[in-house]
Image 1 (tube, rainbow, N blue to C red):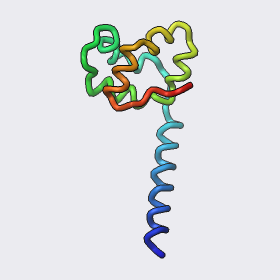
Image 2 (spheres, rainbow, N blue to C red):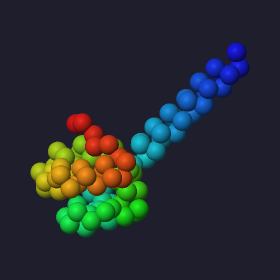
Image 3 (cartoon, one colour):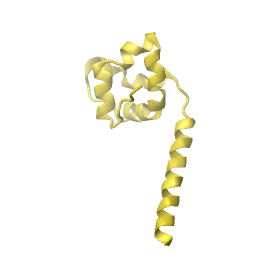
Length: 92
């Protein structure tokens, strides 16, 4: 009886931690500047780029709604970079 309770509590803590991380993100497109070279030239993304994409993932839909950012964020290379970094592109 203890094992299911421990598993449930562990999952709940992980979920709450994920929510806190997501809620703490400040959406700043400039945070993705480390990915610019990879998006423009198809070079592999750096570790910093992947970290920033993961941090900014909750903001990607907001960026897609911005006409100035949409062509950059929605490009095939941007999707490729996100995929290479293991960050699924959101469906907005």
